[in-house]
Amino acid sequence: MTEKLSDTARATMLAPLLESGWAMVEGRDAICKGYKFADFADAFGFMTRTAIWAEKWNHHPEWFNVYNRVEVTLSTHDVGGLSALDAKLARKMDTLAG
Image (cartoon, rainbow, N blue to C red; front, side, top):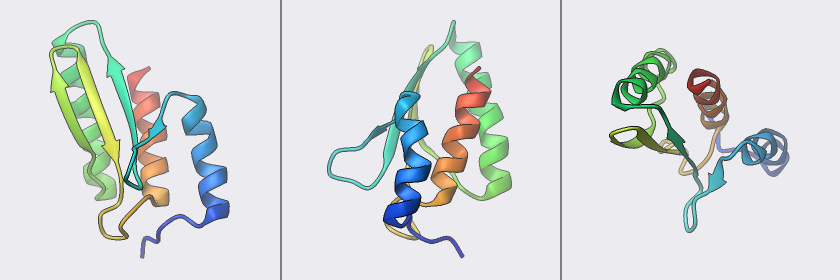
């Protein structure tokens, strides 16, 4: 079962993400990041590639897309905050964004 990140796990897993552009969401135990692509097709392609992994891991992002931008928020609703799944999906999204 997925668990909310402990203080130790939080420091270990989130530090590299925060250094790579992810940020804590104010007033919520969640992380967010904005991605910018060359055009709509690239942004939608990123979302499609991410969706495949999200479905495989049964962990789905909150996101918003306008033209070449994708804004993402990650949190695990089942545990009421951040879990290892959020860190895992964030790392995968960074890789998929290139």
